[in-house]
Image 1: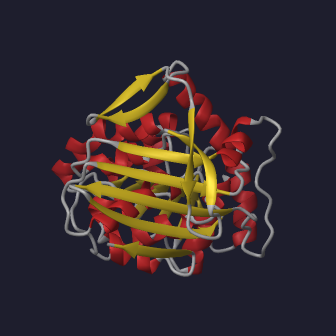
Image 2 (image 1 turned 90 degrees about the vertical axis):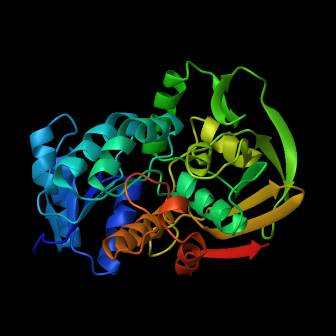
Length: 343
């Protein structure tokens, strides 16, 4: 297979990486698989049959350059992103190709905006961090809900998951974030990320069907606190998580997700409910679907295809809501995601 105009998936052997490779192949996109485990890459390539293998470790810039040679773009699926995002985006910038990742780590996403916006802007290289269920989907929903508004008083993003069986990558990323915060919690308030030691609080959230009213952890802070205020004038972004999902994540004995269909999806269902308040007006947006890891694949692959087709609203480093026409992008996610907008 020719690697001309191919998309490189770094971290292709991981749980989410395999979904991304499958989605690229389903759409007929030439694919290069990369990561540090050459043997595992070759093993999966023998099954896939139509991918090119280019192993590379994140601490080997030469190998990363070879992995990205003549490629059209790179999607980084390898966490923890505190370790991988910097080296891979730097390789993408050297190659002059778009970089996207699926990072849910708040600090890794904040660092991406702080450290690489200038370089991406100078070269007009598209860089989209957090192009995933956490960070990307919420940002698109908020942006679509706001419509013609350019500012809001507050944004609420409630995650309704009936369960959360975390992958090994999710657990590793969580440990890294916990260490970086020295065990503290984080919120976005008064226009900035703020670390604190306040007690965990709970409230009820009335989700649309099929979840209904659920107990949620308030300020269960996710990547939306980086993506949303990166381009929208919103001083307060609050995110919530259903208690049962948070308990699954916290429990060490919770197993990894198990496939229940031919596509490899688990039985997990999600409802993401967004509420925007601006000057006494409320606007909402809701997304429903199956399996937060699986749905990341159509999100990031749709994004890379839009970038390569020139269907973008800006260039350089930007979140999903700033880079794309949010409402149009959300419509394109059917049938993977069902979206409702209420202005």
